[in-house]
Image (cartoon, rainbow, N blue to C red; front, side, top):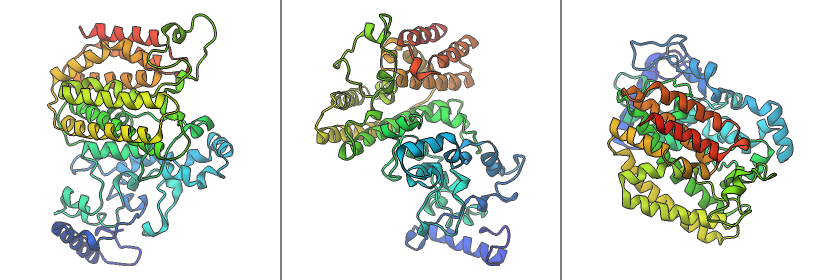
Amino acid sequence: MMGGLCLSASGQSRGALDEHARALLAVASTGDMATVNHKYVGPGSCSAVACHGGIQPRMSTKVLQNEYSTWVSQDKHARGYAVLTEPLGRQMSSILKIGPAEKAQRCLVCHALSEPQEAKAREFDASEGVSCESCHGPASAWLGPHIQASAQHVDMVKLGLIDNKNLAVRSEECLSCHLGSARKDMQVDHEMIAAGHPDLTFELDSFTAVEPPHWVEKSKDPLFGMRAWGVGQAVQLRESMLRVARRAQSGPWPEFSEMDCITCHHSLTGPESWRQKSGYEGHRAGDPPYNLSRFIVFRHFAGEIDAAGDQELGREVGQVAALVTSMSPDRGAVEAAAKRAARTADKLLGEVRDAQYDQARTERLLKVIANDADAISRQGERAAEQATMSVDSLYIADMKAGGPNAATRTAIDQLFAQVKNPSGYNAPMFAAQMKRVAATLR
C-alpha cells in the first residue's frame, strides 16, 4: 500500500513510500500535473485497519477510519455487481440480448468500477461493485499523499481526488449513474426500463441520508440539508437537459424514458379514471408528456432567488417539454432548446450555490411547495415523488433548526405512501395529502 503505512507489494520501505508521497505533494503545490499518472488501484488499498477498515469509528481523528467497513457491510453500492447475477439481472440480460449482465459493459459502467485496462494500476475484482474510486476518483496519485500530515484537500483534488466536498461536484458524480452522463456513455433508456431496470430518480439530500453516510460532514450549519437540496435540484435539471440534447443527437426517437412513464403505464378503464376526468391540458390525448419532475419543484426556489432567470428557464424548459411531447419534433430543434435550458440552469446553479440559507427561507419554500399540490400532482407520479423527497428534506433541515411540529412529520410519512406504487398513483389523492402537509405548516 502507498502512503507509508506498510510495505508495498514490491517491498518498498515505509521511508521510500513517504518520500514518494512528499514528491507528489510537491508536484501538486506547483500545479504541474503533466507528470501525474492517474490510475485506479482498487478498494483493497483503503481497507487496512489503520486506514479506513476499522470496525468502530474513531472520534480522535479527522476521519472515522471505518469508511471501508461501512461501505462493504451496509452500502448498497457494494452490491452493485452482485445484483447483476441475480434473477432480475439474468432476466434483463436475456431480454436485452447482451449476454451475461455481469460481463456487459452496458451494465458494468454503473454497477462496478469498470475502467479500461490502461487505467488500472493492477488487476482488481469487478465483483467489488461500486467501490471507493467510483466516487472518489483514481487513487494512484493521491493515495499516499492524502495521509501525510502536510496534506491539503485542494492538493489532493489536483492529484485526482474528486472534490465531493463541493456539492455541485458531488451531485454531478452521483448523477453520472443516477441520471446518465456523456462521460460514462451510460443511459437507462426505455428499452432497459421495459426489460426490468428501475426508472432513475434522484434527490441529493435524500439519497445522501440513506447512503449510509460514511464520512464526517464538516458543515455545522443545521440547514446544510436545504443547501444540498437546492444545489442538487439545480444540477439535476441542468444534467437532464443535457441528456435530452444527447438523445436528440442520436438513437431511437422519441425516447420514451424522457416522458412521464405512468401516463401510459396505468389503467384507463372505467368511468372513474382521474386522468380522463382531468383531461390532457397542453397536449393531444395519447401523447405522453415530457417528464417535468426535475423542474416543477425546483422552479419555486429558482423564482425566489432570481425571478427573471426563473422566467427564462421556465420558457426554455417549456419549449423542450412542448417539443418532446409533440412526438415528432425536429431533432436539431430539441437539441438546441435543451442546450439553451441547460445553460440557463447552469447560471442559476451558481446563484443557488451562493444563496443565503436560513430558517425563514426553508419554511417559506416548504410552504410554497406544499401549497402547489394541485399543479404538482397533475404532472404525474415522478413529479409527486420529487416533491415528496423535497418536502421531506426541507422538513428535516427545518426541524434541525427548531422548526415544524410532529404533525408535519406524520403528514409527510403518509405522503410517501402515495408514491409507493407508481402504477397506482392517483393525482387527486396525492394532492389531498399534500394539502394536509400544508395545513400543518400554517
